Image (cartoon, rainbow, N blue to C red; front, side, top):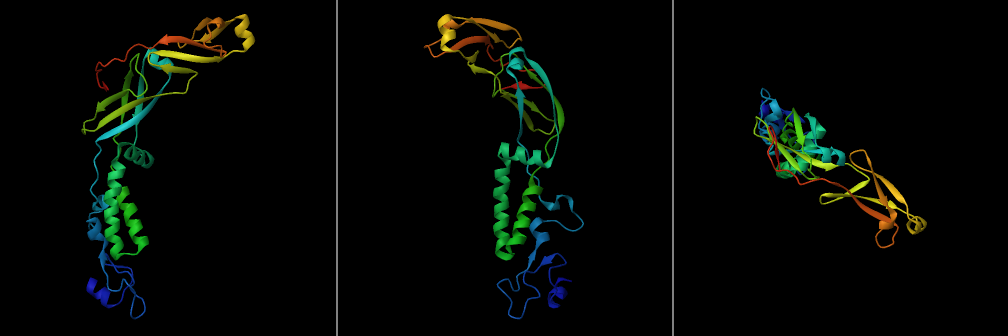
Length: 247
């Protein structure tokens, strides 16, 4: 079938064989007579189109960023988080875990091999298809993530799925008026020189939704700023919890 199509000067794909330059004038171009079988490149047959024969990469770890407020870190909370599969999430996780870099390197090897025999547009499309088909689906599921009092940003809580993939939830602090330094929380207040000289009581909101009173005479260095410790977050617990482990 392929020999007959080639003898007839058929252009494009004939029986799965791509012939660049077919149908050109006598004498041809640099791709004259070059034949590339795209079915062989992706190792699939027309009767087996699942994933086009490109073996899926395997997740070693999934990392999910979880935003938490300082109030939640102080008191503790259990967050229910669902993970779904989408193209955006697939690429995001691949970039975050380093899997995308590995797949791109493999795709570059395929692209280089194709570029020798195929025009640039065909090679580029094949490269993009290979990378997309190589990325596995994101494991889906719902998780109850226990955030204990004293956890801080960067704390990681890991679950293991039945597929053997670790799902790690990494805590990220939301923007707040407070600044954390170790186990202490600080707030910066601007005071006028007049307020500092005469003295005044400044009311500052605390994490437990109350208020704390501070004397402006306690300013440091005469810069018109009052630094006050607002709360003790306590030490981070390293105990394992049912269904998840803290790192």
